[in-house]
Length: 283
Length: 244
Image 1 (tube, rainbow over the protein chains, first blue to last red):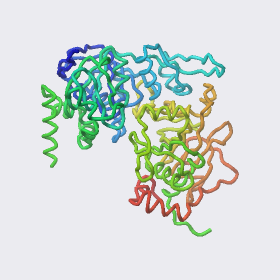
Image 2: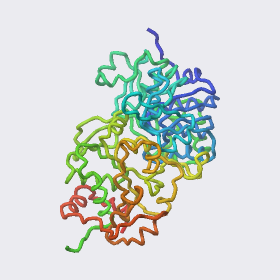
Image 3: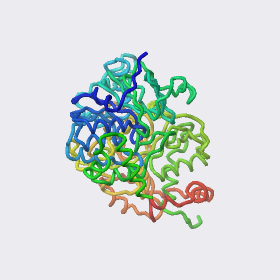
Image 4: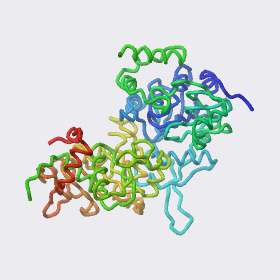
């Protein structure tokens, strides 16, 4: 069986401008931030980003890498509004496919199941239909005859997710309370890259948590990379919580200044060192 | 009746709690501080079967005891299964209960981008949706919302999606509103004591339906007041969300 472990640079090396990219997690929770930061160090741009949006969307928007965003929201959770998403929208910097949360989920399910669409009771009556004029409806073929929205499959070229543990084969495990939709993102994408807090031997996985914590299986994974603290500053419990102080800094600092101080280094290690230095200054 | 000592914020907690009366064994999903105090008050008193979450993925009892698992994917099934009554916020809401949390201004290039529609569309078509407006004003209660996120009565009827559509009430810092007005429009159902009809009308950007006599929001019982003050919100956070 093949060893799929790689570096963040190798992951980004397999991505291209113009791709449709799914990003796992939810809001400011368990986002593959180390992979997003690696994207920012590359020249890759013109992306269609599919995400339950958090600072992943914020960073890529601030850096001007998004051509189209497919999302039901973008938020930092403890800070309601994502500042760079907001600025980008107010400047019409990218196109938006604004879906409801459930529509988005069924779009992932459709893609993972190789279905063209799935019906969902959501969207009708709302302006989601107005701003997405390509959306179509289906009528139940059974006695009820209900009209439902046919959410198109959210198929992606590549998915990026971050989990707590993974082995070199691509099996990955979440140890927090919520799987989010990371398994679906991997199954909905032609290639999926998993970053993890810790790369372990396969035998360690079943010891670390119950069977149902083994969320992502290797058949749906292309590459695995160990990125300790790689979800920073989003939460990745139980390994680390959200770095609220740093998130506040991110939200309150003009992008050029934030980017120069934390994102101008040559590596993820440079970022982590810059964050540590900032925290030491705060003490 | 004896003179009350309840504050405006405490009437708001009572009015929110009342939203979940008679709901039985469903998830109470309060968005915001005062709704969450209201949900806890309802569960401690007249709606003991309500389910609550810890704000993450666990179903918990009042003392925090974990009784179940509710990650987002199951939460969304709770919504579409209808076993849930949410109290959402609204950046804008109109007389039919169309709600906006997405953006202000033209959607193509908004003057102010807010959250996005989030789950408002699926919520309003599937499980009861009430609203909490901490500051009743003409900025929130508007003639037309800029981006319909939560679906109101007129749009639900036009789109033929009334099957599970239900908007029980809107609670604001001034009073309680329902949709018993003509054509299922917003009606002033009760005033919080100390508020006048004129104040509510002045703070509402459309013509509100009014009953012949507007009742006051009910008084909290002594037991309820004690629960709010000593058990549910001993730090008095409620007074920061609603003053007076």
